[in-house]
Structures are given as structure tokens and as C-alpha cells.
Length: 422
Image (cartoon, one colour):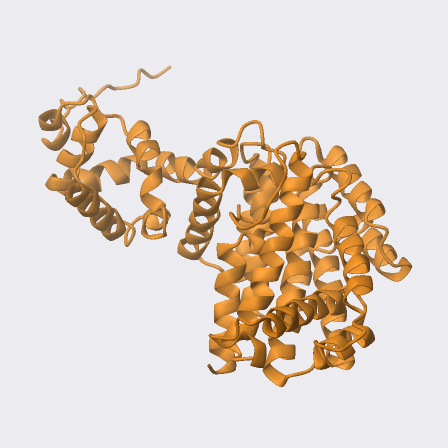
């Protein structure tokens, strides 16, 4: 596979496993005890996702031990060793990781000692012992950057057949830059929140709890206390993938309380403009995030919503509600002129069950309406139709299709009045 195709495959893996959001999708192959705390469960699935991400990099690179059919005992040991080497390299053990990757079947093997140190570092970064709750969403963003760094190192290592300490150092510097930029963005958002002081205090706690190297901790604290303006930050985000990632993290931070405050809404819109992300792309990003958390509600434990897992998907409808209400007259006129859509929406509003074919028709016609009302582009994204009940709830039907479809009666002209002088 060409490098661009391999990168695209890993990007898809990051999203599908939840690693792009700093958590891990529930994985049936990860064994967790029934009495495990939510933090331990989240940590286990996060690490499971990291391993699958690195293994995907080996598979798409056709690495020696990752081609189909290599299932004997030496092959299993070699795969485990090379996967550990990648995780260890991302944790700062580049020299030892390079030796293990080059000779994964070496005896004696440094695997056990390296595994213990890598596990301890991941547990500290993920705040496993304290649970993945305090100071979020900064915590999730830092974990997502960790996952992206692992994927980058894995792709390079399996593609070239070796781990380069020099290349690992470059990835580490890029990851630090991403962490600083993320802290700046979330700090700027927090300053517009009603409970912004609490958010800033939580982020400070996360930075302190991870026991980061002095240089990195100092850089993050500086970004937290004195963030730059959005328009100054945007040029430092050179790739579209990195911009989408940062926009996703800011979006999650805005939605974490269950609703979007006016200041948060304005911040997200301003950031989207700075990143040159149009309304349709922003709506698609929101729908993508909502779809993941609808399918993996356990992952919400890592977003402080374990007790109310419906909170985040509900909050993701905030922008849709605002857009519909802002464009209500125009939207109603467009629907009136599309007789079939009006009848189907009225049927659904009256409690009638829609067939699969009718749902497809509604989606297609809502997408057509998005050409004139871009806010409806969210229905074109995966999972967009899950928002249909919200749309129906917002539209002022009286549940009678005929009265809704027929053009409204013309208003009688008001008699002219003449103001009395003096």
C-alpha cells in the first residue's frame, strides 16, 4: 500500500477505536474483572486500542511477522515484542525499543522489564489509579495525542523495518507541540465558560498528576495560563488531520456539560473559521462524534458521563436546534414546497412508523434542502438520521398533513391608519 493509503487506514482505525477522542471502544477480547472500577476498564480498552492500532500499522505495511499465516509460536512472540517496542519507543525508551524491534526473538529478551516500565508510564499518562475523570476533556485530548504518536511511530517502524531513535525524537517533539496547542485552545475555551475557573483548575491537576518531564510540564502550564488568540494558533496546525483533531477536542470540551453555552458556541464557530472548516464539515464532524458515543456508551465513562450516557449525544443536537429555530420560517416554506417530505414528516410527527424506504426518502430530501439551508447538512453524515426526532420535535406541526401542506391562508390587509397630529 502507498504511504498515503497506509496513513488513511490508521486514521480510520483511530476514529473507529475511539482513540481519536482519547478513549477506547469496548473490545470483547480485552478481559476486565467484574469488580474493576470504571477507570480501570477505560484504561484496559484504551491500551487494547493502542495495540490494535500498532498491529494495523504492521499489517498494512506487510511487515515480516504480520503477514497472514504467521501464527506459530515464534511468530506470536515476535509480534508481541515488536508491538511492545513501538509502545516503549513512544514512551521515551527508544534505544532499548530499537534493539527489541530489530531482534524480537532475542534471548535473553528485555521484553518483561520493558513491558513493566511501559505499562507504568501508560497508567500514569492515562491517570488509571485516579480514574479518567478529573480535569477532562484535557485528559482525553492528551491520551488521543499519545495514540496518534504511537500510530506515527508504528507506521514508520513497520514501513522501514526498524525503529529510528532520531525519528522517535521528532515524533516526540511534534507530540509536545500538539499538547501545548491543545492546552492553549482548551484554556481559551474555559475562559468563556460559566465554570471556567473550575475547568482551568482541573486541567492544572491533570498536568500535575501525569508527572511529566519538567520541560513539558512547564510548557503546558505556560500555555494554560497565557493562551494565544485562535487566529495566532491556527497557522501552527499544518495538516487537515491535526486541525480536525483539535476541533473535535474543543467540540467535546464544549459539550461535556450537556449543553453548549453561548460563549462556547461562538468559540467553536470562530475556531472553525480560523481552520477554514465550513458549516457542512463541522456538522459532519459533530455527527461522527455523536455516532461513536451512541455505539460505545461505555467509552463515556472516560468523559465524566458514565451516569448519564445520553448526555453527550443530546448535547450534540444543540447546534441543530439553534440552526432550525434560526431558519424556521425558511425551513417551513421549503418543506411546504416539497409535498412528499411534508407528508412523511407529518406522519412521523403523528407517531406513525416509517418504513426503511420512507426514511431514505426523508434523508435524501433533507440533504437536498441543505443546499439552501447548510445547517441541515448534518443529515448527510453517518448517523445523521438519528437526529430526525429532534427535527420533528422542533417543527410546529399540528399533526395534520393537509393543514401543514396546504399553503397558509392569506392574511387580511390591515386597514390603513392615519396618525393624528399634535
